[in-house]
Amino acid sequence: MKNVKAGDIIVDRDGDEAKLLEVLLNSFLRSSWGNFETAGPWYTYKEAEKFGWRIKGTEDGNIINMGGNRYKLLED
Image 1 (cartoon, helix red, strand yellow):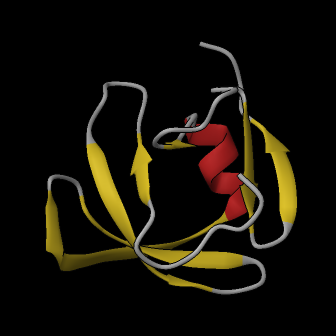
Image 2 (image 1 turned 120 degrees about the vertical axis):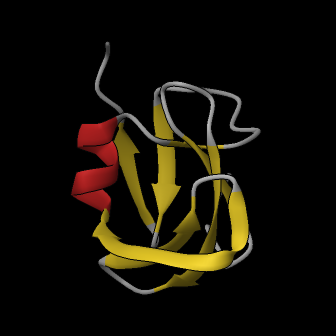
């Protein structure tokens, strides 16, 4: 995946899904888990890495590209 954009789905370590509602250079706004119509909090890409979140459908579950940057997710 080369470009992350609003509308992409993120998955947490438990398999819960949220939608990226807004994507900025260093942070993003996600929906609530399981409710794509309700906004959740803003997060930085470093926080997403720390939480082990990934973009749904990524070929390599340990690497995500967000905001033009490549991030390696932490192992469980």
